[in-house]
Length: 244
Image (cartoon, rainbow, N blue to C red; front, top):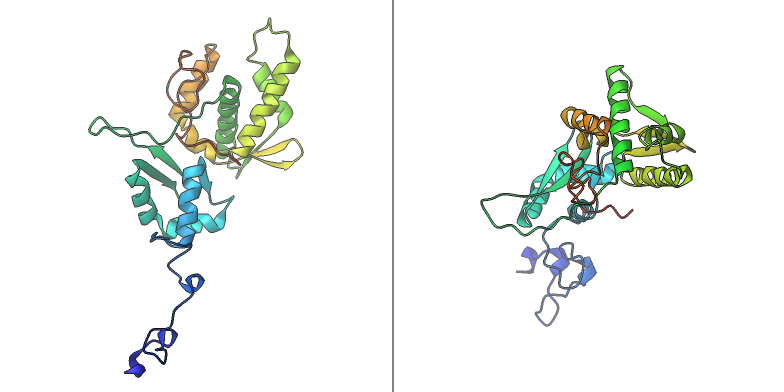
């Protein structure tokens, strides 16, 4: 009986069900789409695969979508041997490559190295962030000149090309802004974000600080250059390169 039919699927006079345009089908986002995730969850999944981390501060709508669809997004990542870390207190989520001796796992995520200058800056940012947190401040701030002087203090006294090192520092600062460790509030003035807490927990901070005081070499692994320049542990979440 026609009374039992849904209004959108009413019978045509010849007895066939009226066709529905593809763009009107809420479950199909493109021709031949067999995906089952909600559109918002798909966007979050792509973000997590493409970028180092997802931030509640930078993209609040996507952060909310992550929380709403966290279980299914985690399942999709597990399908490709990647785990999801969600720090709700700090509003940061990032992924890690699964590594285990139990199964022969193909590696999806590549380590993206930090230079020695970038590692020096990360240690300083984490140190400043820690000090301000202990003092009860909501956020720590720093000037580009302060960061430059911090890096130059680690230079070899025989170093003569100071201008080249200054350019290297500016490039390192730009990368840390892109990756979300710093937010430029005014020209040359930056706010340090909570991402440094995730990347450098207290024990890791102490380890790297000792390493630097001992005249450390470039860091190996996800905060590394190159592999023959050994140093203790990794200094960053293991993720794909952020291309923003």
